[in-house]
Image: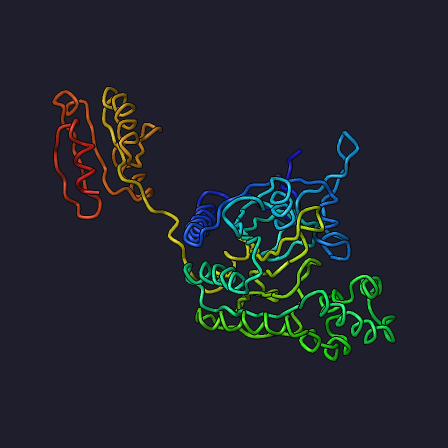
Amino acid sequence: MSINIPRGTQDILPGEVEKWQIIERKARELCVKYQYSEIRTPIFEHTELFLRGVGDTTDIVQKEMYTFTDRGGRSITLRPEGTASTVRAFVDKKLFGTANQPVKLYYMGPMFRYERPQAGRFRQFVQFGVEALGSNDPAIDAEVISLAMNLYKEMGLKRLKLVVNSLGDKESRNAHREALINHFSPRIGEFCSDCQKRLDKNPLRILDCKQDHDHELMTSAPSIIEYLNDYSKAYFEKLQQYLTLLNIDFTVDPNLVRGLDYYNHTAFEIMSDAEGFGAITTLCGGGRYNGLAEDIGGPETPGIGFALSIERFIAALEAENIELDTNQGIDCYLASLGETAKDYTVGLLQQLRTAGFSAERDYLDRKLKAQFKAADRLKAKFVAVLGDDELQNNQINVKNMTTGEQVEIAISALVDYLGEHK
């Protein structure tokens, strides 16, 4: 009986995985420039963390979490997102007490959601995200958004659209909440069962419903912008000022909600409008979550962050026909003729690698012509040919695969020769 890969997962094979490595490398490089340090949290956490952190009215908690009971009778959940775990670690390890504030972190790793697999969306997927904890300055919101935008742009994406909104502070949200309840209550029976449950718990989540998004009450629902108090308005205006200073184009969308309960003030999404990208256009989402640290037992700590899917990143690159150079080639391929020479290349190969060169040799006893074909497939810059006769004379033939030039040098000089011509 053959065993197939579980639905909603994927094997990322050589030739494809290099795309992931290029994106991950660029993300890490940008985080160094922006002074965000990596954090690695467990793949599973206590379920309570996500119930309190993500929110029990969200689709993630209600429908999508992989939750199980361990041998100790504890409820454990595979992490569906990275923010709650990062903030939990921030509180648990008392990072709020460190000298460098705000604490700026990034993470990269697999997340798990039980949802319907579709193009660019999997049940196990990889997220890259950043979190800045400890500052109420809208400039840090702008910085977080600029980091995400720059990552996409430096990878060559052009068909990008940034949408921003303000969800306001607690006072503003409470006023908006009452307005939403009054708006939807008379006809809530026309909405799905999920929305009916959300009406009293979190009516803002109704606006994010995928099933009822075409209902006429959705378009006429009161906007959060109308209920922002003076502080929330000033905060949002400052954010827009900073984005303009950073030359980042954006659109204000009062209907942007985001799918997690912990957001307040800034909310944003980056989308792709590339032709053929698909119906789900969101590449990245994030926002401010003041109050999350307190919800999971920490001190009052403002926070802002975003998360993006590497899978959807790659899909956006493909939609814009952007090819990543996944085969950089190797420095040298060692070809051999004769048994003695073949044995000698085992040690010579190690010398090259120890000296810092990427190198390979033949392991299939192929003819010289076939070894050169193998070198071509590996995009070798040089092929060094060693035969038994050359070995006796301590000589080796080196061919530059770009120019076709061939030289015979001492074997002991190979490392220096490659270094000079690299």
